[in-house]
Amino acid sequence: GFACLCYGICVGMMLHALDVDCALVFGLASFLLAFIPEVGAFFAMALPMPVIAFDSRLPTPWLTLLVATAGQLCLKFVFANIIEVKLVENDSIMKMHPVVTLLTVTFFGSVWGPTGMLLSVPIMTYFKVMLLSDRIPAAY
Image (cartoon, rainbow, N blue to C red):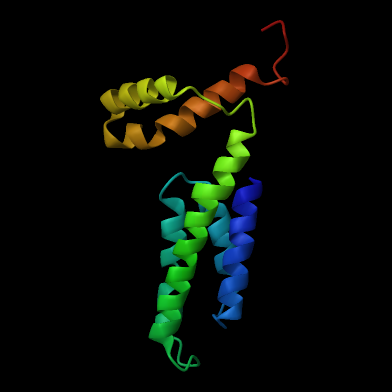
């Protein structure tokens, strides 16, 4: 949640710095869509494209579009490959053995195909957190 919030704020600030209309709305959309594994951030990147491309106030809308898209790709790279990895690495509940991850991807891939492979790790992580949560009473 915290990494998604920071990602949304950074996207909103970057688009605001580029003088894009509705930058805060696109930042909020980036925050919300970042919760969808793998593809959510790319949908969020596509949302401001028509607004930037057809904005007559911008002196060079295509250059602004290129900078905005490249900036969002860089932010996604940094957050997904550095910040989120460090956050998960330090959380003992979220750690999973690589063999468990491979078995999960294999199982869900055989059940649901490529979609199952994409969703396998978030589903397994959810089940692990649910099983090891302190909020579940001991009687269960």
